[in-house]
Image 1 (cartoon, rainbow, N blue to C red):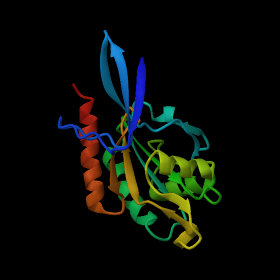
Image 2 (image 1 turned 180 degrees about the horizontal axis):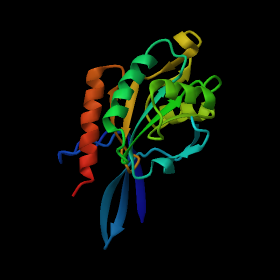
Image 3 (image 1 turned 180 degrees about the vertical axis):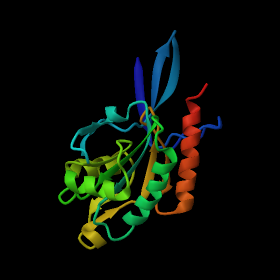
Image 4 (image 1 turned 90 degrees about the horizontal axis):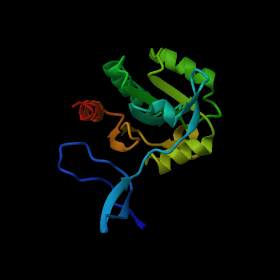
Length: 207
């Protein structure tokens, strides 16, 4: 027999020195050897299908066996996006060539940010590798995964500069697709903390 219950608390507060796991968790109770055993099953990033600046399909499988940093932006953003991309470029340079690390930037203005626009944007940033992917796709699916999976704001708002409201957060995701941290992507201090936590997360896989 298996029973489940959704726990709405935000994280694992274990004291084992590892980064917490953020998001919802589900308590799953099983009968093992005649005894009731309860385990926690944590929220994970679901499968998705978007298109990169190279024109190929990017899915959750593309990120298998990687830790990655996700964010949401749009190329014509007049407010926080330029700051975010300066900071995420620091992460890119810091971990460039590390096969265990990827960056995933989702446009929230897919009507404008075509594959060609994203490719030019990436090139102007000096990004020439597939370690940092800029993805576009169905707007509703992008907004949905932002708000319901990555736990950040991403929505149209005609009163906002650029017509879109979105979070300036960078989201750190582990190899099991669990969220392990959310950081202010507009500040040097926030991104310093992110890079430190990326080192900690990479170290978790080492014997």
